[in-house]
Image (cartoon, rainbow, N blue to C red; front, side, top):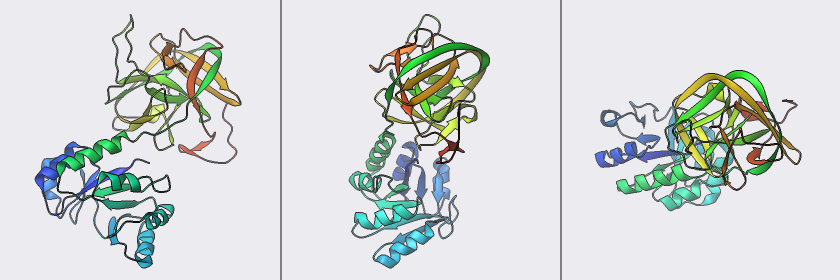
Length: 329
C-alpha cells in the first residue's frame, strides 16, 4: 500500500503550498480549497474540497482509550487523522491493527519514520504540520525513497523455446531507470523473473532507459503493494514497482504502454521447488539479470544459466494473494 503524505496548510501559506505541490504530496488540508486550486491540481481536504471533513475525513485527538476507540470505529469507512500531545507507539499499533485508513499527525521526519513502520505495516500516511517548506521537500523525498524489499533468488533456466506470434507490452515509465533495474514479471503468480530496463547500448536501437519491454499481454507484474497487475491492464498514470538486482525498489509512474505484435519466446526456470515461466519478445534487446547483476539478452540465454527472480504465493483474486485451491500452469 502506497504511503500518503498530507500537508497541513492551516493557516494558508503559499510557500508551503508550493512546496507540497512541487514535492508530489498526495493531499493538503486547507480551510478553503480555492487558493490551492489556483496553484495546481492536488487532492484537498476542506469543506469545499475533494474530501470533506465529517464525511470523508475525521480528525481525532487521542487522549484516552475512548478517543482511540472512536478513531478505530471511524476508520472503517473514512480517513482518520489522529494526533496526541505525546505520541506513544501502543495506541498507533492498536489503530493500525484495526484500520488501514489512519493518517498520523507528525512534525518531523523522525516521527514520520516511526509511525510509517508501526507493526511493520505502518499507518496509511502522515499529516505533516510545519512552517518550513524544506521539511515538506525532505519528507516527500524520504517517503519516495522507501524501498519495497523483494527477496530475489537465482533461478536456473530449464527451457527456452519459440512459441510464435503474440502481443508484447512495453511499459514506458516517467523515470530514467538505471542498469540492474527492471520489472518483476511472470506467466503465473507463483513466480516472477526480473526483466531488465532498456538502459544498455546495443547495435540495433538507442537505449531507452525509461522502458521495460516486459512480456506478453497476459503476464503478471508485481506491484509495491504486493498485489499483481496484468501487463495488458496497465495504463498511463498507473504506478509499477521497479526493482534492482538487490531486490530493493520504488514505484515509478507509467507514462505510456506500447502493445505490438511480435515473435515470442517462452522461458522456464526453477529454484528448488519453485517454478517460473515467462513469455517475452524474441529480440536481443530483451534482457534478464544474472545473479552478479549483469544483464543478459534472452537470445544468449542457455539451459543451465541462472537469472534473478522472485518466488511468490500462487493464486490471486483480482491481484490479491489468496489461500485457496487455484492451479496455474
